[in-house]
Image 1 (cartoon, rainbow, N blue to C red):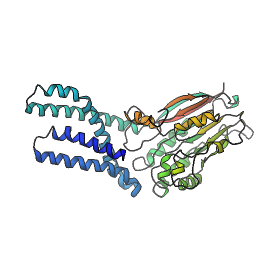
Image 2: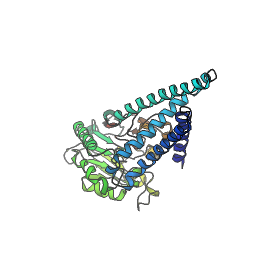
Image 3: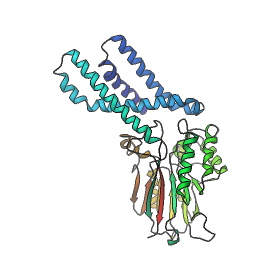
Image 4: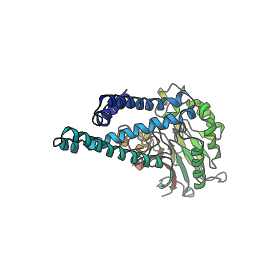
Length: 375
């Protein structure tokens, strides 16, 4: 309901500034209104299309609907900034010049929006490798330099297809991590729709581990857990495993890698799904460090309370495009990067892909290579 209200208010404002103020003739205003209504519906259709039909059939509609909504948003933001100078100038102008002023400001706002969206599209399709080092107090010196490649929010679906995922796999393999952590929101669609694309993850050279994100619970989480297990990705559902350096002989130093279901799992309707951190950590040797995979950063309070050394999360997309980060921070403690809660480190990756608009502004996508250091 809130999203629908925002869409209606956005298009109402755009009607007044892009149509009514710019087009003096009534018939052209009606045409402009009809165009805005169709564009609004294209956005609604883009959200629904991947869930109702095969995603590849909705590619043109998804691009059109999603690009329009973010273009409209940036146009509206630019026009809002121009409201004060517009109001001051209008007092000194006759009606004909007021129309000319409205057209000038509308053109400027549209150019700003087009440039911003164009830049954001180029950024969204180019995830970069980000390297960070984290010192864990309990890390065995033999594991100093161990690396974890963190992937989140790939959002394979209508727009992010096989070539995109294959490029991600290639970048990860080139970084030669000891293990790969896929921390949720891998897909936007069912196994039937997207399984042949996601199978590209079988090309990862390092051992790969996965925990569910909220979007898996829109797409058949049980089916995806079974599918990923079948292609060699270990699914961690409120459990932990001992992991060490890639290729190390038996008996080498290890740490605990734990993973929990997403925060939304309990109300998803998927039987038996719910986050259970206590269960994942029960009976562990507390002299060993534990790294937790949890899709949403907000789980860090629980992690800190149970002595987790490092939590790796995604979900936020780093805000994806300005100013959406301010909305995300209403629900999550941090947008991106490394922070500390008590003695627990939290790393929030901006994610590999995007949800909705194929646009990234101020939040470039990342493949994260975390290097663990002993004190």
